Amino acid sequence: MKNTSFFQVIQKRRSIRSFYDKPVEGQKIQKILKAACLGPSARGLQSFRIYLVKDRKKKEKLAHAAHEQQYVNAPLLLVFCTLPAKIKKMMGVRGENLLSVQDATIAASYAQLAATALGLSSVWVGNFNEKSTQKILKTKLRPVAIIPIGYQKNGAGPKKTKKTGEIVKSI
Ligand SMILES: Cc1cc2nc3c(=O)[nH]c(=O)nc-3n(C[C@H](O)[C@H](O)[C@H](O)COP(=O)(O)O)c2cc1C
Image (tube, rainbow, N blue to C red; front, side):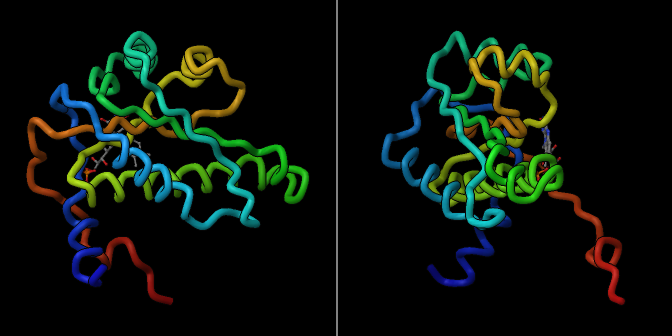
């Protein structure tokens, strides 16, 4: 991949909240999942797990757990959870509460970029009820990001970002 195409992917990725009712091809799903697992992780432990939700009823329930964000009921739904047991043993509370969350969010971010590179769209959903989500997934793992993915119906408006100087402090 040329450098330019990598930066084009980053620029192209936007939060999309409406999808066609068209399934995501199996090959694309595998590529997205592989990309999610290729990121850096604390001590290389990959302290996260991904739930791939196919069941329509479960997706509807998850949309409800995400305070009625209906786009959670997307053709492909990935839920990124932390799996902190090992990193907690090695690094204590910081491993449990921070590093495993970082692992899971890096993976989710890679998945979003891979989806974009494959002509798909997605949105990061962080506003959901953790307990209800755990119940629906039948897991004790902590869900940190829900990523609905599909073929976009409506695009996003112009992207507004702060100037780099407002974000970066050179010292
Ligand atoms: C941690 C996090 C939580 C977010 N939670 C939600 C959410 O619950 N619902 C939603 O529609 N978008 C959510 N977003 C998407 C943001 O609103 C979006 O990324 C931001 O407005 C910038 O737009 P862009 O993604 O198109 O560049 C979240 C993004 C992040 C990184």
